[in-house]
Image 1: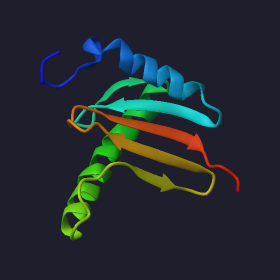
Image 2 (image 1 turned 90 degrees about the horizontal axis):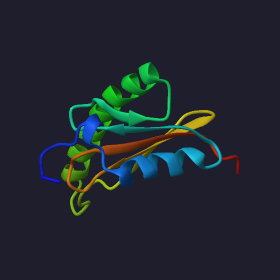
Image 3 (image 1 turned 120 degrees about the horizontal axis):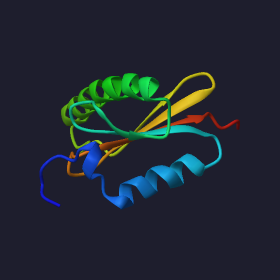
Length: 110
């Protein structure tokens, strides 16, 4: 595969497998694969909800990367978690910037 961006019609089988495996984990509500423009490449969720999440996630990633750059010695952003009362969103961008995996799950009770 070239270094060009990935589109929903050319997703490697490995990525589809990752979405399937993550979706099967206990507490996971849904998984969304997002491209650098904030578009949904693939999802295990309702398409409309996934598209809304995709757009906001790209804004969060952009701000988090800018923040990490301003903190001396912080390096690159690796992942991020956003917690709400009963749910959390785990956001992990690809190291090459081609996609981001977003996992929406029930918050663990400690």
